[in-house]
Image 1 (cartoon, rainbow, N blue to C red):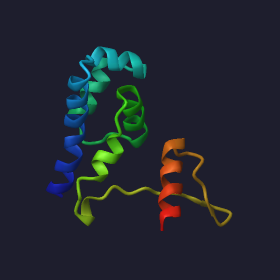
Image 2: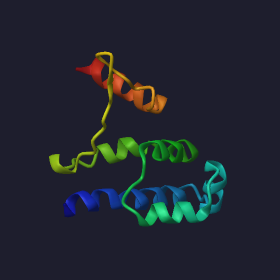
Image 3: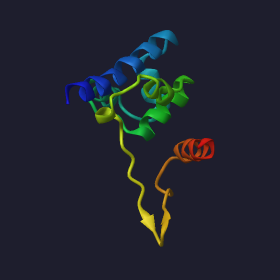
Image 4: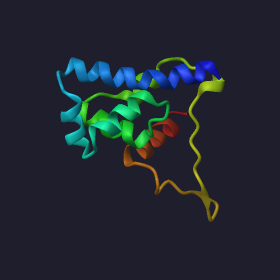
Length: 111
């Protein structure tokens, strides 16, 4: 469990690093994302950052956070899980961000 928490804890640090690299303030990022600074600070302190929020932050900072997190070689127990409902015998991905659907499509084509 500790490895899993450490893995998710680093997401906030990665975002902070990229903010600094781009010399962007938290206030600027909050304006870009249409959220409050306190929401961003809470996200940095917590372990849970949604994929959708991470994609939006990545767009604002022009950075592939999902790619970096995927490259950290997690243990099998620490891998994030995605649940996709089956509707009428087919996966229903309508609730996922377009970027996530495209990433899944590319991965499936690769195999």
